[in-house]
Amino acid sequence: MQALKEARKCLETVTPLLGDCGQVCGGACCRSLPGEETGMLLFPGEEALMATWPGAKVAESPLGKVFFCGGQCQRENRPLSCRVFPLLPVLRPGGVKVATDLRARAVCPLARQGKDALQTDFVQAVRKAGEILARDPVQRAFLEKLTAQQDDLRALHRQFGR
Image (cartoon, rainbow, N blue to C red; front, side, top):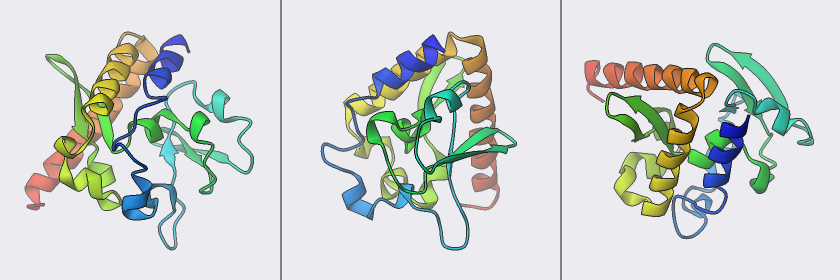
């Protein structure tokens, strides 16, 4: 749990843009798509930190627990997946790298522009958070799952020319 708390702390004060990136897209990442409820993956142990969030719920998914806030953000308490969005720390042979989360491209205009469009401090904080998580065996296993999913999505994009 200590690694999770440290990783979350890395991202307390940095954001993808200098201003509120939600102004660019109307907060698309915080709204469910029409006809479906969407949420954010919780890192292992994070469910306990979300327990007091009014109106929120948690459900199981193949990758882990998914948090549904209903669009009512408590920004200072938001999950780590929200804090790193639209990026993702991934595990590579040379260590932790930062990738644009391919799942984010459907909703986030910043994800479609890539890391160069984001604040350098934000990208560095995502990397630092990933390095902290990678030192914890439970969090590292979760990062391995996320990295595998990212690699699978990248392979599909290549296969179908996206």
